[in-house]
Amino acid sequence: MSSIHSTSINSPRELASLIKNTKCVIIKFSASWCGPCQNKEFKHNYSMLKEEFAPFSYIKFVELDLDDDDEIVNSTKYYDFAIKSIPHFKFCYEGDIIGMYDGAQSLPEIYNNLKKVVRNVQKENEKNSSQITQSTQSTQSTQSTQSTHQSISNSQNQSRESTRDTRKNQF
Image 1: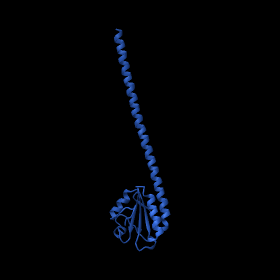
Image 2: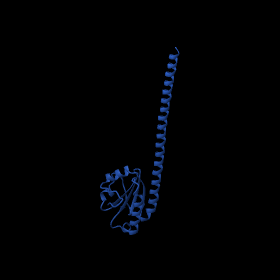
Image 3: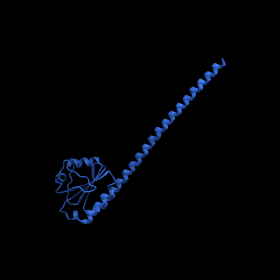
Image 4: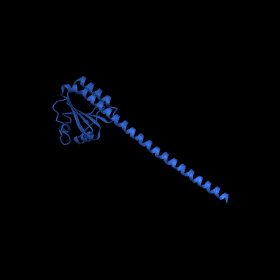
């Protein structure tokens, strides 16, 4: 099932691909007949969680209904979700399921772990940006050095020509 800020999945293969190719995926398992899943406060809090992390393209939310999406939920070809109770969440990071959470009370823990993901990605981006800046500065320094060597070489050639002209004029 899909809703705002959620990624629609149509097959186990699609889900496996999303998990593999996305930094962080949160999978919510629920059902229309599940009382806690339909609780207004839980639904509101989950919606707020998705909205807060929606700006981060490397975090995706997937919502699967045990009945409507049973082919995906029950497939063991790529992942064995082994759902024991609902609502249930799987926290996937860099292609692996690293966390499993049961119940509506797990949203604060999921929130805290998503904040860690954002901090880690920001640190990675800062590190990469720093490396790019250093590389650019190194390239600019090399170009500057080459330009300086060319200027010196040109100056030396002009000096030699001037010296030759002076010698010619002496004779």
